[in-house]
Amino acid sequence: MTEFAPLFSQDAACMQYSAIRRMAKFALHPGIISFAAGAPSAETFPAEDIRRITASILETDSRAALQYGLTLGYTGLIEVVVEFCRSRRSINAVAEEVCITSGSQQALDLVGRLFLDPGDAVFLELPSYIGAISAFRNLQAELVGVRQEPDGMEIQDLVDRIEGCQKSGRRAKLIYVIPNFQNPSGLTTSQEKRRAILEVAQRFGLLVVEDDPYSDVCFDPLTASGLAPVKSADVEGRVIYLSTFSKILAAGLRVGWIVAAKSIMAKVDLAKQSTDLCGSMLDQRIVAECCRQGVVERHLPKIRKFYKRKCQTMLDSLDAAMPPVVQWTRPAGGLFVWAALPDGFDSEVLLTEAIEQAKVTYVPGHPFHVNGAGRNTLRLAFSKESEDNIRAGIHRLAQVFKHHLE
Figure 1 (cartoon, rainbow, N blue to C red):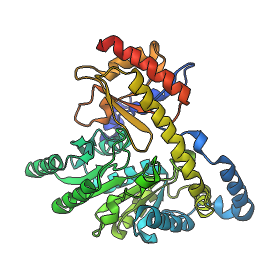
Figure 2 (cartoon, rainbow, N blue to C red; figure 1 turned 45 degrees about the horizontal axis):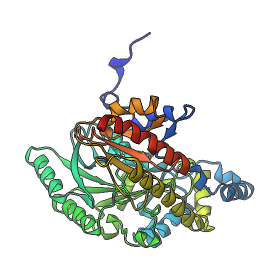
Figure 3 (cartoon, helix red, strand yellow; figure 1 turned 90 degrees about the vertical axis):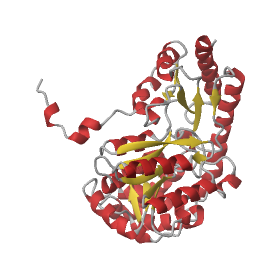
Figure 4 (spheres, rainbow, N blue to C red; figure 1 turned 90 degrees about the horizontal axis):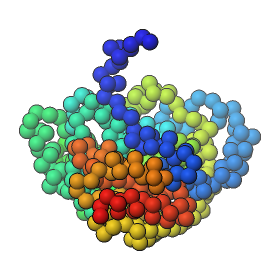
């Protein structure tokens, strides 16, 4: 076999396989209860509405829907996103500030390629989203972890780490945050800290990358009204806002978006041309029509009720089965519960036993930490499994942990 390693780029040498994707193969084994996959449940997809809308588009506008389109996206969907941001996210954007992407992951890659040179510093929560960690690490950025409190980033720690980078001559570029029901921790950043993060970015001349895929997956509608994005207070164009329809419509449609200043969007246009030239015009038209016809609005209450019930089942099961020394978050939305074993225990080591003996999978917490910490933590996703399986899976997992903790 020919050896190609010498030909790979420096970027390729930095690439690491996603811990979440690594766990996906175990979810397919018979009898496995999977708390690993963070995908939305197919039970929440409005399949009949999507079928009807797709058929109508192909009947009335098939030539345009099946053709190439503009790099920044279908104009009709961009208009929908502008209104969606205004009415649901308190973001006053114009069409020239919007790009439609193939999910949020493409948006992270585009932003990273536009702003990061090797060695540039990105500041992320501890823990943070594996997809963002991969996108920025692949560009040879320096990933700097910032301690996270129950209400979001510890602001003084953020300031200290930015100052430390600048004093050592390293270039600080981006602050990456997931303020709503964070993946993986499930935590929500307070409004006070959202304002503080923006003020820190202004003070040090950084950009904020605000990743917001979960804000509409809140369990209480009153909670949603208090989740104003960091972007909503941005008057300088310093915040790059990312979101997606994957969690509130259908993941397979692969439609996300970026809202950023016009000067940034001009560069996004150029960068995206070398990535996919244009996204799926059919998918984008389907999403636009789902929004125009009120499909998203009609289904949101069902989605919230669905995940609230699943989350409560998991929390009740943890309360009933887990040893007192195990701790976990109590999210008000999203898809994840974050758990911590006592210091000294390694969730990755225990995972083998959980799979082989308890037939349960989860994602170890270590890969979510850019500072090498988190060995004792793990992420539990409640979106995929039935309530009966959640109860059974948590009970089995608790037996594994008890065997070692006691």
